[in-house]
Length: 258
Image (cartoon, rainbow, N blue to C red; front, side):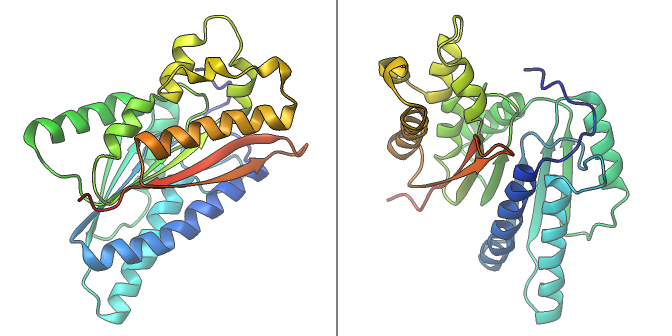
């Protein structure tokens, strides 16, 4: 889906809020997971260029700096340092090149292992999961940030990720786009793929008020995650300049399987 943006674009207030949530969550996540595991993984599935038009930091740089702050704390307190693996995926060639340059300019400690892929989140993640499944290898404790511009995210892929213990996924569920296109001709297969069910067709959108419509779409996706993917799900509503809902942030995780 073409997002219509330049290589580097102006940051929106709701994006700043989203990044604050990510930053605060990672502060705790690195410390908790790093204390009990020799290796942990952060994946950014739609990494972008790493910066915005006025120099504001993108999610990859925020994540790297939080990891570096954590390693500094390890050094000061005599804690054992884990290996932290970063995988940044960006499909747009120019944005990928900009991100690559930004990261190359950083002085990263040896404990941070960074890989960049100029490809799609779906392609790379399917390759990783197929390898893990074929080799019967466990996924290291992982935090996966999925922040697409559109809504072409297969639910089946989330299900496969959430089969692994200590896997946490942070999804930007693009409500504004989904609400706009859900009744449009030609969207059936895309929406069924997104929700992992065709139950969205049972919603009588024309008879719902705007708040009830939003509630129905949000609740269906949340119920799908709770019933078929994760053991814990939480969501945050993000609003734009006109106080309209832009998207929901879904955070979900798996716990130890019986």
